[in-house]
Each structure stands twice: as C-alpha cells, then as structure tokens.
Amino acid sequence: MNLVALVTYTSLFKGTPGLGNALVAYLVGSTFLFGGAAVGNPRAVFVLAALAGLSTFTREVIKDVEDVAGDRREGLSTLPIAIGERRALWIGAAALAVAVAVSPLPYLSGTLGAAYLAVVAVADAVMLYATSESFVDPAAAQRRFKYGTFLAAAAFAVGRVAVVL
Image (cartoon, rainbow, N blue to C red; front, side):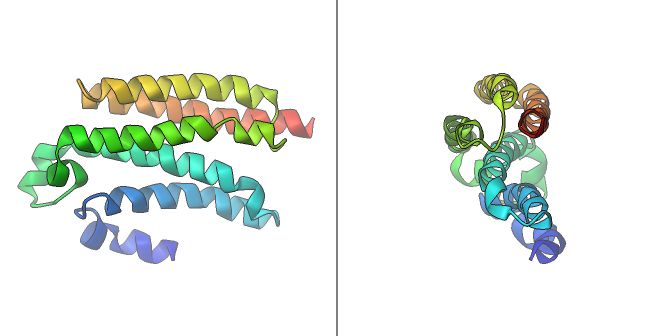
C-alpha cells in the first residue's frame, strides 16, 4: 500500500485538496506502525503514529501555503488554493491541536517515560508557535516547525530509553 502511495503521490494526490497532505501524513505515521510490527507490537506505537501523522499533516499544509504561487502555476489544486490559505491553516492548526492534546498519552499509558513528557512539551510548544507564525510568515513557520518535529522524534527516543532503563 505504501509503495502504491509513493508511486502515485505526484501524479494523483499532490494536487488534490487535503488528500495529498493526508497521504504524506499517513506515510510518515506508518513508519511507526512498521516499527511496531517488526517487534511484534504494532498497537503500542499507534498513538506515536497518530502524533507523527497529525503533526506532519499540519507541516504539509503550511508548506502548501508557502508554495501557493508555484502550485497555481503548475495547475495544482492544493488545500490552500481550493479553500483559501487562512482556512487551510486553521485546518492544519486543528490537526496539531489534536496531536498536542493527546501527546501525553504515551507517558500516561506507560509506553514512554517521564523524559518523553518533558521533551514533547517543548516540541509541542515549538510546533504550536510555528503554526501561529504560519498565518503571518509560512516560510519561516515551516522551517521552525521542522525543529519541533525533530524535538518530537527526540522525545520518542528519550522516552523509550527511560522506560527500558
């Protein structure tokens, strides 16, 4: 399924409002599912997959807002082109709000340790700030958002190490 998604992304999904964003978000989140399946426990990483997917969806929407002029020239109908930049950004913000709201679950379920909670709080703050910044400067916000996703990945790693030790 992932191979078909990757192969058909540019030709079928990139210019489809929201669907291209959702497909990229799924592909990023699915890497956690594959990791969980590899160790025989895909359910343990379902929340991590959802967190990665939701935050990726938001970053992809911000990126589409940044790329509106070029996408219009290419004849693409991305989410910001189809419904407007501000509305698209609000949809991205809503997806991130869900991710931030559920981000404590891996700690609360015992999947990840307290170190995860400390680092993910910073990651959440960076991504929330970048999302608010996207309404003014999507290019800067998209770059800042990457720092938040890096911190979130670090939170997953340090949170797991804390549980194993």
